[in-house]
Image 1: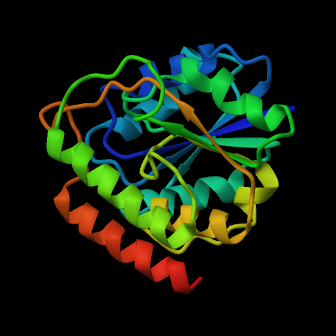
Image 2 (image 1 turned 135 degrees about the vertical axis):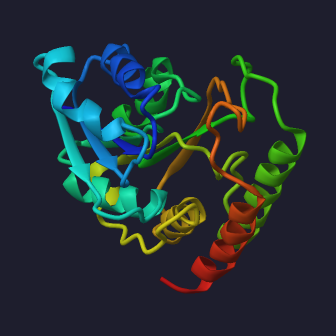
Length: 233
């Protein structure tokens, strides 16, 4: 069985090798492929890709490069299209989400109980870095709004860690180019009546000084996406 890990990358020169190492060391007994989609990085990240075969010999890593910056949604759309795995998992290129959580994220799918699994930062008792109060309020509000339209009872719609049976995510046509991809995918999963599970995960969020990219403007765009994709494809 093959696990595909899709990693959207934008200006992650400082963390790219480390996240790849952690993904390759994740304690799952599955073959894995890494699909890196670089969304036109400008910080020197592009210089790292030729070194991957030397730094990670034998690893199944493919790199796809966008000629212009399009956004996380566009990177995921490209990455999902290129996957071959029975299970597909989204991994951000920063170090906020820990691949040590992979076993519990994929288990409901391996057991045949789930088609989609969300890793929640707000459920369970795993370690969390304490950061921005208003970010957590915004995330919970967007999740509430999403739940109202999808009739799901998620605790963390905006989480990076989303895991899918391969045929499920490859069958979803993603239109959002930027952070609207999270509510879009959630709406389409709900509409498809796929079996959704949620698992508590650890979280080590970054500050803006450390490279965090999402802002309050993205929250408004996500709210628009929640309403838009509740009624349209």
